[in-house]
Image (tube, rainbow, N blue to C red; front, side, top):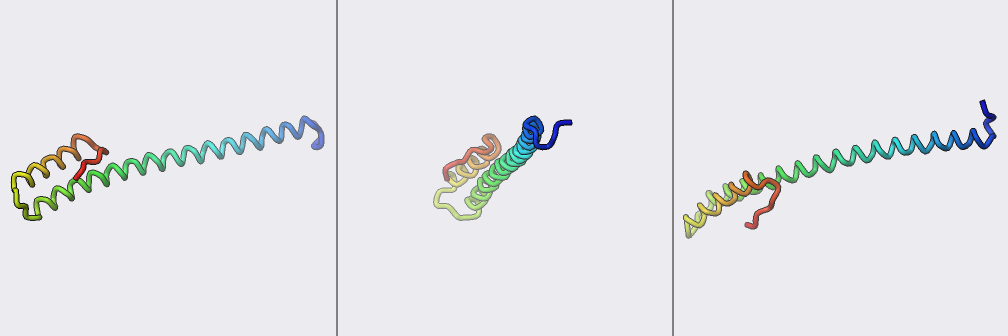
Length: 90
């Protein structure tokens, strides 16, 4: 076995330290990827919930034009079901 002060020993030790740092960085990256995917899922669910809430509010709130209110509700429901994650102006 090489002496602790030899160049070979220091290089091997440095490689081991770098490998450990790389493993930790990869673990952190994987954790962040999971968090981002979870956040995207939560944002998508929030958008769907907002669409349904807007549709419910339009049904509850009296409208001067009932046909227009009904069309808006149908459009919001369609957007939240058929186009998940896509915001609808409203």
